[in-house]
Length: 254
Image (cartoon, rainbow, N blue to C red; front, side):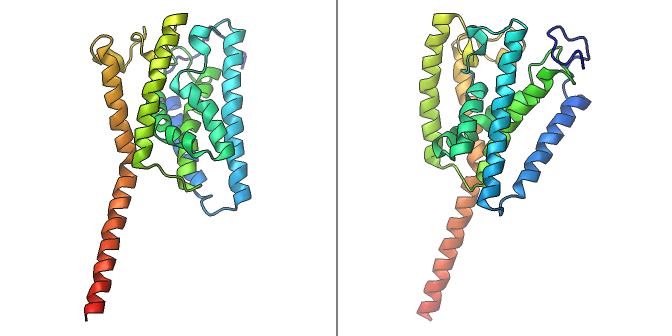
């Protein structure tokens, strides 16, 4: 336990898809399945669940900032809540408390898409299980996904085609703003000013600024894939409605 919060962690390093990584992913998957059972729960119960998720998200994020400050890592170049997942932790907590649909659109498309990648390839380095950073990373990104799924399945929210358009437009506006912030303070939020120094998916893409275009394409494809279940559902409902309408007309004609 003495190693739980230390900066120079001497325990086992993080292992991709090792026992701890796989176990964390399985736990988050089971958590989502468990929360789906509250679809028909009372409004009071649903409210308690939303508040609990919000408090955990915020408490975990605050602890992350406190830890970075304590070990001397907190800087405006790295710790402002400008990275997508960091921003969605704060706004996601607000969404859970207020049931804000506008935030939900971003949580569903950008939160699920970005957090899945962070869970599959977390940048943890030496901080394996059971270090604080291991838990913080999986709680933060895991609950971003859980919050979006919970609002969709339990609270009955759903995105539309216009949601994709709104998310795309405002995300591009945000990227431009962050680019100038990065230029001003020497940061690299959203990784749009240059590729990160550590190995990443961006290494497969051309140099700046072309890799930013590849990131945008991946983002659009991700949004379309996340919308696919709703598109299929709408298509089936439309076909069924057309069949029902045809059957009624046929009955009348007889």
